[in-house]
Image 1 (cartoon, rainbow, N blue to C red):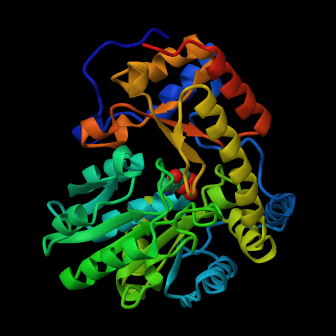
Image 2: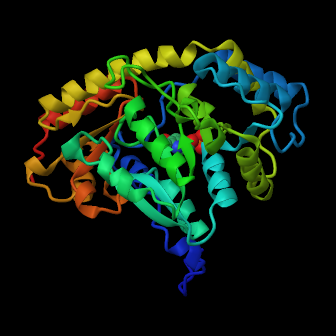
Length: 398
Ligand SMILES: *Cc1c(COP(=O)(O)O)cnc(C)c1O
């Protein structure tokens, strides 16, 4: 059918949100046959026993609506997971809700807690669904900028200036996508002090909670802000099975926190998806209970791939900061004469046969992000080696 010309049918609400750069760059990878070191999905699936548990649930008839809050077995497994790793003891019946990926937990938390005009403090560069959802909520965004010059650490003075009595909530992400920063206990304590002092809520996206490297600056590893004194009662912690167990396509996530905050997520969720995929929930419970060591093994693997990528990038003249967690590394490409990471990424398939992601769209502060490019290392070592070989062989100067 020929395309119908005419005015856009899009609502202003979604038309004002820029399209996601991941689809554009992945399409570019397909079109040019380039290696995709851009989009963050692993090229190997999670544990077979978890897939088997999903098949079993499908065949056993777990095929009708699950309870909106999530199936009891999964809520209990999530509560045990929080206890095992962090000593937190959420009540599985009132302090845990299952969502359609962490994405729906983010949407539910923001729709359930934020009114138009409310101020939300958020670390930039942003995970792109935050800005889209904050716009849909009519929130006012107060960025705290993670800059390449300062190793992508939050500046304490910027944080102090951003969190005020006008703040409704602070939206954190640690380990942080795309910078790989893992917030230290000290950095989190400052957020906690300010949150308590100003009586604001914290929503923390911890989908990379298990993908922290053992040489991280935060050698303590992942510290959920909900574990700091006085923070449980004002914090909603979000996660999912996607990143830690390499099932990004399953879209099973969760939120944990005090009942009043979990209720807010549930209140919004009931009008979004109502309930999440029934046969996948018992399988995710199986992952949490019976494959508890799998994410740590993945993290060890990823650490080796991170080192392979970062060493190769340095050799190719594209040095990246060593990330402490996640599966992303970032390079500032300005020394090659490029002023614009997007132009660099659009030229990269032709120059080198590789696709990367420009980070600038994830910053409000255009100057802070213009020259940054993100690479993903959740790929087979052979793919990473081939990617950096191509980069080293290419002429990348502007
Ligand atoms: C991938 C990702 C998500 C989305 O998680 P799903 O479980 O796939 O919805 C949320 N936050 C961050 C920071 C991510 O990188």
